[in-house]
Image 1 (cartoon, helix red, strand yellow):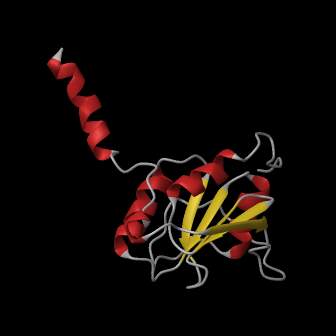
Image 2 (cartoon, rainbow, N blue to C red):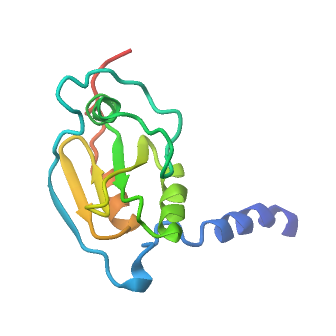
Image 3 (cartoon, one colour):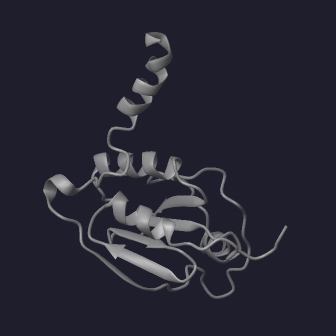
Amino acid sequence: MRRSLLPAVAALVLCAACGASADTASGAVTCESGPRTSLAASGDTEWRHPDRSFYAPGDEAPNGGSLEHLLVGDNALIVQYSPELPQPSIDALREWAAMQTATVAVPGPADPVVRAMINSTQLTCDGLDTDQLTDLARSRRPGQGTEHS
């Protein structure tokens, strides 16, 4: 019996911070919700599906056309984060994104600190709050993606 509990206990230890807000120690994170603006530049129509859920600062991340396709075609959640985000928050975002469905986190501009988007809505935050990101991810409705190859 004790041996069979070991994997479950290990999973709980590894996920002790899952769903927790990474910046709660420094104070509450403030987020504002509103309509989403496009990530694609004019004429940016080429796209590819990303090969992972998290891109670190300095990685070659998917372009605006690819991110726009993910939002509209695949009902994905895109998180742009400031490369100046503290490393513990970047690590927390990496772990959080790996546990999500149809989610890609990429470095973005320095301001806002975090910008998370689904097809119709964007959330801009002054820090990382994975609870609010999870709420946004859960607000996606099945079937909002479009057929494509």
